[in-house]
Image 1 (cartoon, rainbow, N blue to C red):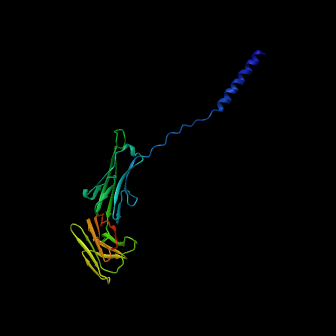
Image 2 (image 1 turned 30 degrees about the horizontal axis):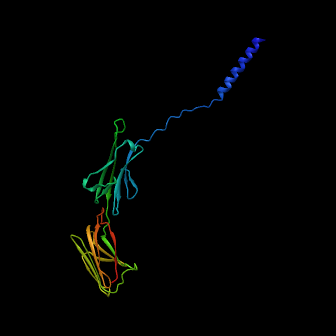
Length: 244
């Protein structure tokens, strides 16, 4: 009887251990996901468009800025550098972008170097080719609006108005008679209701003088007109005249 009870206890113990083992959670070891390989891309900031190595024809606006970006592992690579077949066509700006200075064909190469010798690959590269085609129209460097400083309204056409815009190399002028007839000098021309255009495709630092019957003379100085890829970048100026 004693042996029988002992055998019974052993069987119960084995059954308990087996049941407990079956209740243990199953741990599945999943290998970590692999990080996608690092790569470099060329990006046109102004259009939000990537250059994927193929040849692209663009008609640029007044600005064309490029940036090279390291994808997936930017922390292990240095700042990317962009070079062009014509080194005069690119200008490195303070924000890390590259400004395209004039139109033409750009054969671009971007490079990023690894910060440590164990990083592979040691060098990332991206290439692209862009043909920049410019529009043919002439654009003004300055568009002037003449307003009454008190009311904010356009200065009335009654009376004579004289407007003169000058840089170190050029003078544009407009004289408006009380009858509305115009005498234009240089590249000045009327650009719409109350708008006057000067400095046609002429970059530089300009001053503008405005005289109108019934108002004090107005002068604006240090108006900087810069050149974009194809045309000057138009600066809009408002002359607010004080009544006499």
